[in-house]
Length: 515
Image (tube, helix red, strand yellow):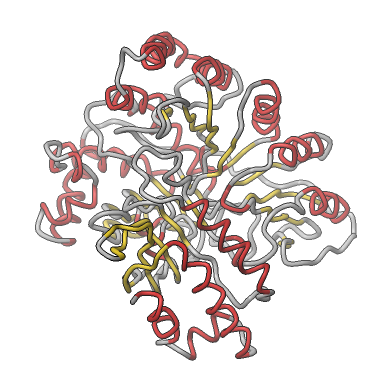
């Protein structure tokens, strides 16, 4: 497999600097700049006065060295905001013209590539965040996800790709990466092989993936990636940009079975071509040992390696406190064998800690979410994103403030999933409670609102799209959430148990707010 040296992308950066200068000089409009800059993993923000930059973290893995580079950037450059995305990347926001160009170039020196982070290119490969250390996982899928990410970089300059080609790897039925409904998903099995799903995705016309193969040996996964590319080249819709996503091919070809047949035909072409895409990867072993210190708590996860722990840190809304990040980076530099894993729900896991180290990391990450509800997911929101409709970040902040003020206990509310628009970057469509930016007419005038979705499910085998109930005025969403939390708390059981015992409970509480 040909692997691209990150340094080689530097030859493309002068063009980015030139176009970015034109944009900030006002000689290149925002739409034209967006069509160009997506290749580089950067977009202008909604006001057209600042830029964002998306740093790939293949398979959600952030080494201490990459973390140290980001921490250094946060100190040396004017970077007001850092955001963790649902595709396991890091977005830097509110960047000026020089900063976005300089950081993009410096990142390559640290193995961090931004190329293909936007536009019609393969996006960051996602992976179960605790792969390799999680109790009960089928097997460690991380090395295969990293190999897939390296291979996909070869397609950045290939012929036409589907928009936002998203590839995910899952190590268990928890399906944290939504691998069963990605453009291409590799789902671990107990026998050490993968089932492969394709042509899934959220947003407009959401679809769960089609199972196109079973019991695929891990070393054969690149054949399926190339087959995905060939399938889209043959059957993808290039004419209508809104339909240039792999999930539309299910309809184009006449349904899931027909799509699976077409995919397998392309797979056969790849296999017959004589090209050797077999993989050989090294499965790393964790040699670190525990120190005998036992640690417990809601943010502590015992790893499958005896005596070692992972600590969960969830910056609310994925909005990282810069000082906390820098302090954590400095501390981890002194801890052997540890690294960060980013989760699609915007949680950060610090792994391979002994008991004493876990206690230190817990103290350093105390600024994050205090409850399951505060671990709710939110996209960057309409104040920043060009296509965003509503301020999802602002809504989440208002809900957290209201829930804290009302004294709603942990366990009475679930994670919510909030998207500012139909794109479903907040994955609202498969959350037990999902919210999507919308409008609601009040006295004939449109007001800021959010559409409410309920009873979505992402777990493998139970995947369900949430049912849209209607729209709630943005100003009333925190009130709805507090009422729900108080009702569940009064029942004396957890939200999960209450929801199971009261299948119509969410609809009944929401009804007055939807009127």
